[in-house]
Image (cartoon, rainbow, N blue to C red; front, side, top):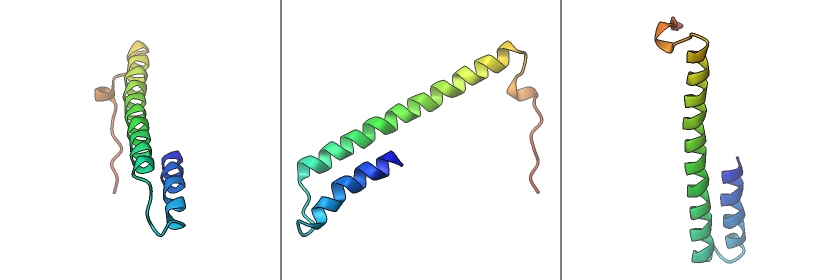
Length: 71
């Protein structure tokens, strides 16, 4: 949600300038969004690793769990 807010915050002022946004602003927002997407991906990966490690420590492995069968 924050990324959408940042993108709109850069886009809206350009509407008052007849659709011309400053290239520097666009580049800055693009770099910021890319940075946070990379951070989120790294956090997601690390969270999964940590969770699987905790499960293994208490004796649970995913390959041994039964899967739900959807209709």
